Image 1 (cartoon, helix red, strand yellow):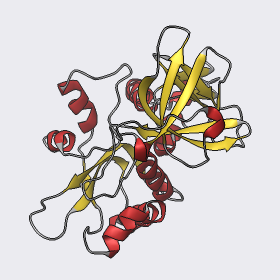
Image 2: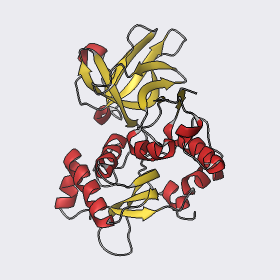
Image 3: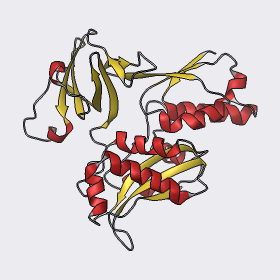
Image 4: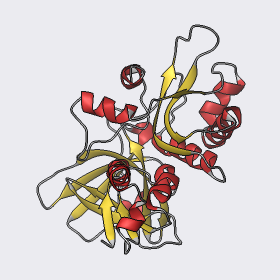
Length: 288
């Protein structure tokens, strides 16, 4: 076994089962394993846990596949983003996320896109799709050549108070907070707490830790500062005393797996939404 490919959250579960059964690192079982190919979710929050399960570092390559087509792949280890495939039978259009719910939003062609803007991806293909919204949002990191990152899903966001938080922001905040620490996480999701028992509303981060922080307040502060630096709306709400600082709720071991199993979505292409604008998911998570 030299190459393994899949959605990080489910490959992680596979590795955990292997390690549990063999009582040794996955890298010992697969001595030639040296490349992990992934897509579907951001790998960075899982990387430390993966390296611990494998017992060493392995190279990684990101892909952007979907049932509707294959859109992009990581063509460089030194450049941010994935190379968008422009000659594979797919015509791309892009709608700015902040205009998506307008009555007649403008659809931008590839020549009109801007770096750093959050777009809903619309595709037409030679397989028969026409102006189809695949549900993913992307941002361009380069326009020469065209490289993208997947920034989230158009239906997955938090804006209970106008903060417009997207998946890319919470994933980056988690990634930055983990740097230089021994903290390892299995999974996480974020939801607003609009009606707390006391005090101001806040964003609640539900995290299943493999190795929890020794100093939780410092960990929270690192996430908080990253969120405020990335999202001016969130920062304004904190400064204006509309929201208080985020809080962390620890999820029991295998809590996310138990939740996915309970709704019949354990495995396959299914994955936990990184964030929600309501508490439908997290209220169920609290029972595990």
